[in-house]
Length: 363
Ligand SMILES: Cc1cc2nc3c(=O)[nH]c(=O)nc-3n(C[C@H](O)[C@H](O)[C@H](O)COP(=O)(O)O)c2cc1C
Image (cartoon, rainbow, N blue to C red; front, top):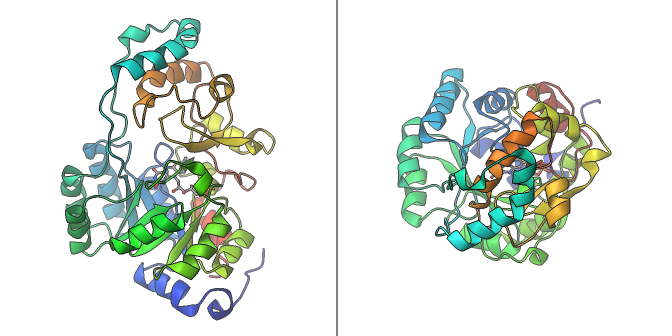
């Protein structure tokens, strides 16, 4: 496709897009969405080397693993990169809810010969805290992004003290205002099309959330910070449209899942590239306890994607882990979280640098 030339002034107020790339030290207004579980530093480095912002998701990493990944990023000598964390409040353990969840999964355990009593409870994902700040501070990541709200004010101040720009996801105008009041440098407008977890934190009511373009436009008209459009954007036309609505940049996830440098497993990649199989996604809380968008599979069909039987985030994950592992070993994705956004059409195996070049409307 020939490069599309346009004036920043026409499609996006000059102050938004060009200021964004300058402030975030980027060549192009594109962020590779942090995607816990399907990528590590390799994808982030390839994206950042292409002039966009590569992201390292830390939600499912141990501190030691995160350190290794950041050492790899440091060794690559890239200027701009992002580390990403969850900011949920972990729920107290709930033995009753856990037992009910394991009961609901009992027929599947039986099929795979799994002893549910032998499954250790696991915390799953840890939120950003002072210990995590100790881990990342020596690396001084230039951008830190948060999902599910923000850390405490003292931790925000600590992150900003080393000069990091802070971004965070909003799913409503009210959340965006809340984030701006607490000092974020840019707001990620996460529309309902987006793959992976919904980033909401003020209300669990999904009916309050809207599609990407509706949200982006409202935020661009409401808040005095750059808006980053996320959800369902997978090609150049989508990028141009988001910028035309007032976004200063876009954050793209699903399109990068089949990049050579991603770690998405082979079966999940195959599904993403199958236009028919990947066309049916839904929000489900079964895999972790929080709503997230993924390709509909057997567990979602059997129990209902939003069934309340799954314990609170992130406690639902532990009981599913051995089931998922056993099924995947047999080439079956019935119990795997098949995260994907609503737009999988452009997913194909290619280098991340080519994805960046195809997405960004000019070089
Ligand atoms: C596989 C996958 C994992 C994700 N993990 C994270 C994460 O760890 N942190 C985060 O802030 N967002 C995460 N997201 C959400 C993205 O930040 C972003 O909102 C979404 O990918 C944008 O929609 P798209 O996938 O349609 O491009 C994830 C998305 C996907 C597809």
